[in-house]
Length: 209
Image (tube, rainbow, N blue to C red):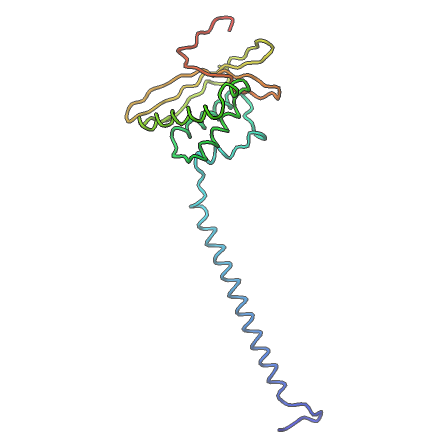
């Protein structure tokens, strides 16, 4: 076998060629991995818009009432009405029903919450939802009184607000407006809480009210 003057083999250049080939293979594999990752990332981004549509229930439940409580009586009833629509209009799971119910009770005045113990409240709520479903009744829309029509007054050292809201119930082609009067009381944190409500036809106001 021929050798160089320094006694080393002439096969050394061949080893460099093998190392070069190995490097090219590695770079090729890395490129494949990076390319595949890029492909998966782009495909996921393209698929996301079709799968990220927020439902009415998800939108209602996403609100954090501890950090983002409705600032006015009108906004309290607006949010409460959105919860109510979810109860009667949407196909909700047992878990979602309880989560929505919890959101609704967070809008309640302390006295109203105490008078609607959780267990009894859930039973009554399920019964009402079942009645709506059996009779194919939906809340198609609601209309709140304007801000200027909210009646503010004080009584017994508390601040109160009274507001009207009209719900449109539909069953097939039949539409029926139902007007309700909500009474709210401001708590020690300056939040308006629902003190109670009734059908407008049952509420008889005097000049003193």
